[in-house]
Image (cartoon, rainbow over the protein chains, first blue to last red):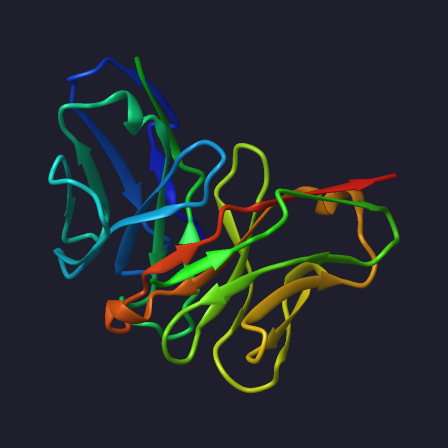
Length: 115
Length: 116
């Protein structure tokens, strides 16, 4: 049973560039959430997708956008990269968007470095 | 504002000794509380959760946590630590303002170091 998979695992960009991160949820899961984990901090919620729509959004600017595809996979896009966007980006999937068991399954993350 | 605090950046314990990793929370309404563990260069792994019911919750790898409503705490415990327990531990609470959606607020994390 494949867990949550993310790609790429590492990438380096320069300020002002754009980046796209990808996530495939755990088999059977239909909801994908994205979190940003800066160095030495806990993950911070970016947004959640369910039924191909953004359902919840955290305190992140519009430079952060996303998409969910019919097969439940998801992309996170960040435009006009800033140095402060350097972080580990975590994708998490769950069986539903509402709190049922409340258990999120996380991927290993995509580490973004902005120079 | 909803928040989670992990007052210790690092906890050191000898192998075989009991361990406690502390967590306090501040949310409106009934809290849904979680513990996750992160090993180096890995994503977060679910350990246990408290939704309702018994205040003592048992989870994976022999960990348990005690919910204390009066002290707004949810401390993680294990009776006998293993060197392999060394990792970064995160306490989290569901954001009640999210309307029930699966949005978690995480603490800053506590690094557990278990020495042989």
